Length: 458
Image (tube, rainbow, N blue to C red; front, side, top):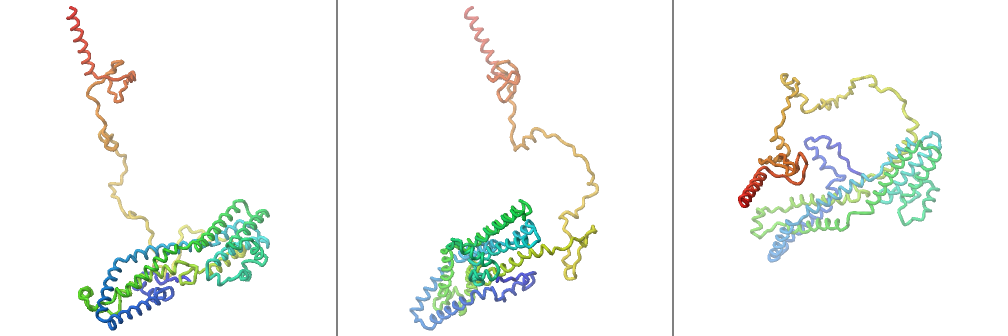
């Protein structure tokens, strides 16, 4: 159902993207032509009613309403609201596609880990993949109208070969009819895998672990896919955007009318009577087109042109699963030497149509740079010691405190010291340090006192 146009835009030639404007399926024109026709019809009716039917006094009133409506539209944040909404819906749309599980990894792990070319081994592998595809079909059948139309009842699943009649009776006997029971085939998968392991059909415990890891990932994506259908975008958000868009163009039906008698407005309109609202139609294409994009992407499991091709996925997964675990395992090609087995310099051929795509290998931006020969000689550079100033600047411009000009003396041993931490480097005395100046002053004081005492006692 999705519209693919990758081939049309494979090269950016002149007018390449312009050709896309003439496509109909999934196009802007297909989405909005009804709303655009209704908008133009209402616009023309209002314009004719204003020009040819209203009396002069009511025309003045209509003109005032039109001028006021135009001022309101200028402050209407429609582009802001629509931009966020469409970006959110488009991101959610792609996340839902990524949540669709593919059975290929489970298929490869089963083909690798469960051996046996006899009929019983083939039945085990095929039945495991049938349970996987049945789980996915039950999930898609509960969220997609296209898949529901294909399998409206469980009997149609029996007819398509996804489930046997006995399995259907067992499926319907589970007392959980009020819940979605797509997980029941997953329990059958686990049970059959367990029996296969007990029968020594699984190659080893690592193979069993590999199968379970891929199966759990598949089961997790089925749950995520179902949750996307269960938890929708908040209804109020969708209502706000829809009301804002339709209200904007309902007001524009009056606001964008050409005013006949108001001189100030006529001057602003350059007195050009454009009966067809050309630029308003362009605005309608942009804004209404964005809203229609969101409406089409909000549920990708329906019948729109951009919805996912789920029935094709079911067909593809079923066919590939059976081929991968059964038929292709028994029809592997023989081991032979490849064409370039003995060649050292491998060169692959090109056709005449593709030879222009052959390009030189990129080797780096300075690959062709040359160094003069006189500068290519190697030598050991001379290492120069840094002085104290350079060291201090290289350590974050930290200034090393200068040593004190006054010589310090230990009060314990009397040795000279210049220690910054207050400890003597000779006796490590923590009692304190004294400098030479203070010692000389103290000695002078004591000698003066002694001389006075001698004179006093005579």
